Image (tube, rainbow, N blue to C red; front, side, top):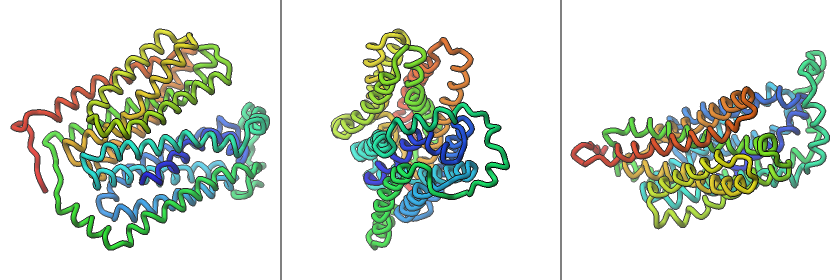
Length: 420
């Protein structure tokens, strides 16, 4: 699973840097093709719900291999699409298969190592962050920057009326991309995932995989009396956490240029330092998880998120403060999700359905919060709405986790653990 997650991270990270080239490929301006993100997010949500059920009834390795294979095929086909609707539909399928891979990785780690799998969980999510960090670099090497900018400045300001029905009817649904480097960028990631998909299929065909499955089912699982309440609270916790992470990562560039007065090169560096410290601290967390409890890491992350987001709000126009606080914010956000999954496994067993609930909460936060912030920021352009959102989300997670901890650590006479 750790070999699959860099590819999954690259899948998520490659869309943004290549979005302009994809828009040109389907003869649309950027604003009219923004539904591609909605399609991917919708597919991710549906895949999370379906995948959670499937992992409870299907062989984990078979489902993981099939999802990786579907993801690889989707990556190979995306550069060839010439129709916007077809691309949006394909992105939905692509998001669904990717979400199943994400759930599968978390479920397999918990199945194999249980509540002792914190370092492995951190390694899994570090590999995802590493892939997301490398994707823009891959796109820059494959596509370059000057060509993309020159080709897409004008189409972005064309009205949607230029894409008339008479013109679109003459355009085939499939064809070679205008920029062949776009094909190589997606083909590289698709080839990587295709090669890695061989390993789950190999494990599925081994007899030992079935023996391990029967052994795991015979061990039984823990189900706390407040299992559903814990999942609901953790759903909200991940909703605010992932929403804030996506919001800041998506809007920090535009915020830095419009509100803080930074040049585009500086703003791009600010964006990179956020994801760079995010990926670096996920790597360091592999070692920290061997000596620190997941709950301790969550508390430290909450403190860092609160301090850095408050610092951002107070000194929102100081470039030096923005650099320092952004670095701290990225580092603080890095370990929260894998630590949260490892923490809840200490008190109640996480099945495929339970993991799906947590992933759906994260996906909803990733969809809803950035979308709402984009609307509100447009109405109040002079206010740093993005920073207020990050501070509000940090306060929310800091309030929710103590409630989670109190509920999970009630005295044993108030808890009812069942072995099935």
